[in-house]
Amino acid sequence: MRKKALLLILSVCLMAIGCHGAIKKETQDYINEKDELILQMGKVIEANPTQTGVDEARKIFETKKTDLKSKKMDLFKKDIPFDMVQKLLNSNVSDNNMFNSISSLLKDWPVRESFTKLQNDFTDEFHK
Image (cartoon, rainbow, N blue to C red; front, side, top):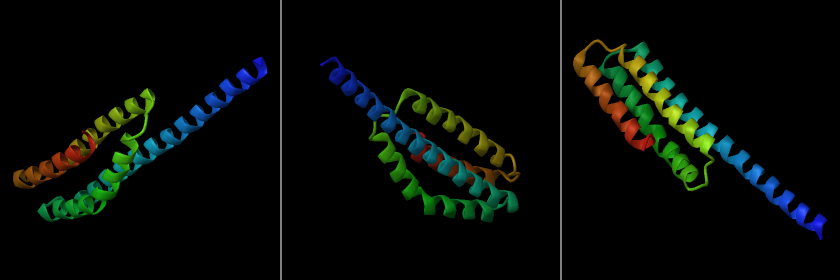
């Protein structure tokens, strides 16, 4: 009887570890995709720090927004361990730092204002 109870407890623990491992991978994949999106937008703006560059960055954002938002919604339907919640919050800070670095490339005020709208749209989609 004791062996059966121990085996049952062990199997439950192993299942929980396996489930959290998948959620951790899914969380990290989501964070990596967010980072890659910002990097792509940043490369476009770095190559062309004008309104045209910001418009191209917006097109990239709009193209990838739906898929990434879907991944976010799927992820948030699950029981996310605290360490992954913390990792998501830290990634939001990292996102803001990357956007601030990109913004510093823009010297023209109306262009910077347009970029700020893009940043706010990103934040509305992925930081709330």
